[in-house]
Length: 220
Ligand SMILES: Cc1cc2nc3c(=O)[nH]c(=O)nc-3n(C[C@H](O)[C@H](O)[C@H](O)COP(=O)(O)OP(=O)(O)OC[C@H]3O[C@@H](n4cnc5c(N)ncnc54)[C@H](O)[C@@H]3O)c2cc1C
Image (cartoon, rainbow, N blue to C red):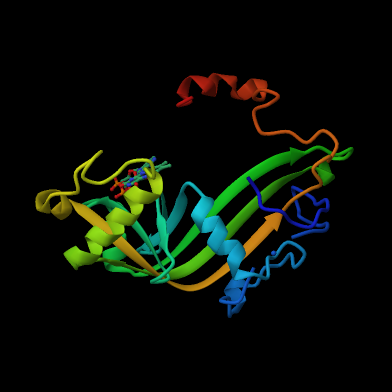
């Protein structure tokens, strides 16, 4: 669900019309949102989005080659860092070990917004782009802390000890935990009026015929 936001209409393809935006942390040109009407001037927007968004996409670089990892994450608000995890070996831990600068994006997609002209067709969304430095956490104590936050975030109905056991020392050794120190972030949002004519969710009208074959690969 997108949070409440002043209504307006915008352009999907070129983003040339009105509407959205959160920033107290952002400081430089790289987090300067071109569409000021969509920029969110409030860090609380980004914090809320980091609580709600089910996954993040982490960009890393090695030898000039970009690489993205779609992953679960948790924002530790007290420490103001983001934690992610993966297997101990793999491209992501290798990239992070070699170069600490990363970029993470989290998104929510709302309704699609039809218009009379293709140019004016649009989509609701809430998103954040975060620049920071990722480190593989060495301390077992911090690794346990991060994994505990992750499990509690994604499995809030389960209780440690009762419903599952905590990681053993051996399991912990197999797990890479990333601590992303946040340098800058930006937030952006587009939200239309509740009664926007014809607004619908992706898939409500089925998939485009040339995509239907792809349904056999869907996890749903
Ligand atoms: C919604 C979602 C949540 C996820 N949550 C977690 C999580 O909590 N922890 C976790 O460890 N992993 C998670 N994954 C899997 C994650 O995307 C990576 O596959 C995993 O972290 C291993 O990354 P790596 O770079 O070390 O992989 P490697 O296996 O070392 O990557 C080698 C190559 O495999 C390919 N590859 C890697 N990942 C993917 C992928 N997801 N899809 C297609 N090709 C891929 C790429 O071509 C890459 O260059 C999640 C994926 C999704 C989509």
